Every structure is written in structure tokens, then in C-alpha cells.
Length: 461
Image (cartoon, rainbow, N blue to C red):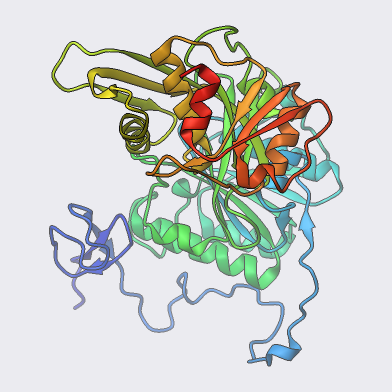
């Protein structure tokens, strides 16, 4: 007589490693206290489970030679949001699986509902599947966003096996899953959102995407650490991973790509949340510099590259004498360790006694940037605050600072200078190696420097 006792196993919440017994440290990823116990079902031979279900393969399985593979350019699906298309490398590759993560209330569902409406308006067959909201709730949001295309259809279902049968029957071109943590497979005896369910559900969607050419956009919840909830293998299975960042109580949102098999991972898109949904910020440099003080010490404009996009950012520094034996160093929006190194270079090479002063560095705008080209702007802001001498409001500076005080060349200098000229800056302080190789746009003067001593002369040493 068969036993009714369920078999359990332990799974790592970080990497998905399976073990027959609990261990404090995962043998695979070496993370501590990530093993959780979940039930496991052993399917009998011939049973119809998730592994035995047909995936609707359109072509027979057979090995092929590399010469037989069609190497024509992948067709991309336009989302109607140029910012999202640029982050994805020009649009969504058909038959791909894209994961979108973000904090609760940040706007993930709003973003993908806008994508669904725009794509359906363009004449494509789109299916929006929600496991978190009712059809009435979805309609209320769609009416508010103005997305009521006739080819856009909705479904409220969490049983992925039923969803799979429907997809093979309807053959939509784009499917949006909201969210992957609410979907479950009846053949996996674990709670929805568990490691086993998320892994198996994503595996089924991956097979549907690759074998039938269906494009999937799936929403994933995030943990308190900011990573997608579920096994880490989830991010390895999908073709692209996008994170929607920002303060839910602020209006601006940042869409950052951390993985993309079909494009760059350095691109970001900036959106603003309004009553009619998310709108694109076409000129992020302008909004990053909005509200900038004029004639104030400790404020310098610098430029960083986010993929192929130059972004002007205001660096603010506040240097004041410390009341303690150990000076305080605090950096917001950039690497605090790098700021400490730059302050040590200033003290050693220029003799500025910064060890007696507290220093607070802030990159205005709420976007975290760590590019080495920000070094010169941070150094100038610190010197400006220390000497209480304002920098020229129409000057932009960028360049990498070495430990010897030298200013090294950076890439894409011409694009940075052009962005400064477009926003009305009249002078640009940059590495001498870059200044000798680019032509100054009309209305802007290039100032090439080879060391921080030359840069300090602008403040009157």
C-alpha cells in the first residue's frame, strides 16, 4: 500500500540548489541561511505532469549544422516607448523572455500595461495575464491610461498549465505575466512563489517562448535586498533582466538593464509618473540640473555616460571642520570609498589638510553613478567648498584622477562636450589627452588639464 507521507527536500533561495538535508551554508553558492524546506512530488511513470506535457513544438527536433542556421537580423517588436526600446537594444526580440523587477508600487504593472496597449494598437495580438488583480481593477487602470485597443485581451488566471493550453491555442505574439510569483503548476506540490514553483514556471514559459516564438514580459517581485524574489537561477534563464528603480513617493523612475542577451547592459531609461501613466524624460540632463544653485561654492557640473547617453549631473560638496578625532565621510549617489581616495590625493599632492574636515558629497538627481570620469568634478567640488570659492556656473568638468594627481583621458569625450554645449555651457574642463583629439563645438571653450594642480588654478591657489 503506497505511503501518504509527502517527501520534502531543501532548496537554496539564492541559487536553487537542491539538497536532501538542511545545511547552514549552501554547497553551491556559499550563501548562509538560504535553505528552505519544500515538498517534492515524485511523478509516476506515464503520468501527465509538467514534464510530460506537450509544449506545442512547431518544428521537429533534430540536430542542425551551423551553416543551416538562419543568421538574418532578429526582428524586434517596438513597444511604443522609445526609452524602453533603447534600454532593450532597439526593441523586444521576438520569442524572448524578459523579466522586469522592482519595488512594490514603483509602476511595473503600469509600465507593462502601457506596453501592451501600444503594441496592441500597432496591430499585434497581445494577452495580459494577471494573477494579482481582477478584470475590473485592470479595466479601471487601462481606462485611466487610455489603453483600450480591441486587439488587447486580458485573463485572470494563476494555473500555468491552463495558461499554457490557452497560449498554444490562441498563439498571441506578446504575453505579459503579472506576476511570476503568483503562477503555479499543479504538478509541483509547493506554494506559489516558492523556489520550486518559480523555477518550474519560468522553465515552462521559456520553452513556450523558444519553441513557439511567443514573446513574454514577466513581472517579478523583489526581496528587501532589491533582487528578484526566488532562485537566482531565474535571472540566468531569461534573456533580459530590467530593474525599475526610484522612490515610490517621487515622480521619477529609472529603468536599468542588468542583463541583455541582445544588447548593451549599460543603458538606462528615465520616466516620470503622472496621472495618465508613465511619460518619458527625453532630456535627463536638463531635469538633473533643474533647481541648481547659482554662485554657490561646492557645486560643480560633471558628465557621466549611461551606455550611449551622456548625462550631466551636479556634484555637491560640503566641507566643514570636524569636532571629533576621526573626520566623517559621507557620499550619496556615488562610491564613498572612491571619494575617500580622492580626498587623500588632494591632501598628499596639494597639501590641503582634509584630515581635519568632515566631507559630505551628493550627486543631485537621485541616480547612482560610479564612473571614473566623475573624479574631476568631485575634486573640484571639494576644493570649491573648502576654499569657499564658487566655480563658474557655465563650466562643466570631467576626467579620471589618478593617485599621483594626474588627470587621465576618458572615453566618449566628444559626446560629453556636445551635451554640455547643447545645454548652454560655455567652457569645459577635461583631460588634456581628450582636448587635443576633439574639435570644440561652437560656443564652448575647451580647457585641457593634465593634473589636479592645473585644475586648482581655476580656483586661485
